[in-house]
Length: 196
Image (tube, rainbow, N blue to C red; front, top):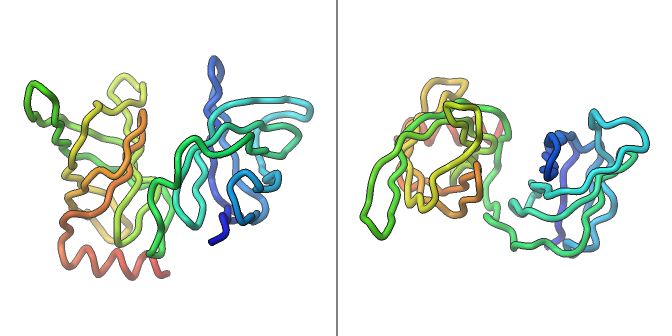
């Protein structure tokens, strides 16, 4: 299966010591293997000649992964191989967006289990699961470590979606999970929404 980054994808390059750079891909790029991806043409707020290095979250048709990258003159170049494999394979149609979400996360630590409030927005959703980007009250994005599952209420175009999500991967302010439980009506609406 080829690695494909679709046109119109929103990418964030996280750069140490400076503000993150948000970009939109201008063309679809594809390669048989991750290190062989050609430079990705992007639209960003950086001026000509500016050069940034950091970690980019790549949302591909196969799933999501993170990699070192360089942004220069409107091109995003992947540097080397992905540090992690694709986090979640995509077997279902997905919809990117910014859907407000709030809920309760169950954390499992040596001291025992506890519940904590989480909030943020869902950036990517399918009938199988979602990607949550958390925000804290002080504006600093973070998630407590060790989240096993989360009960989330997500504001979707048709109304509130309620689901229990089992954690697949968690990094900094991102949590990707699969649905453990979702209301039957919500599942039907979500299926139609993702196929549209």
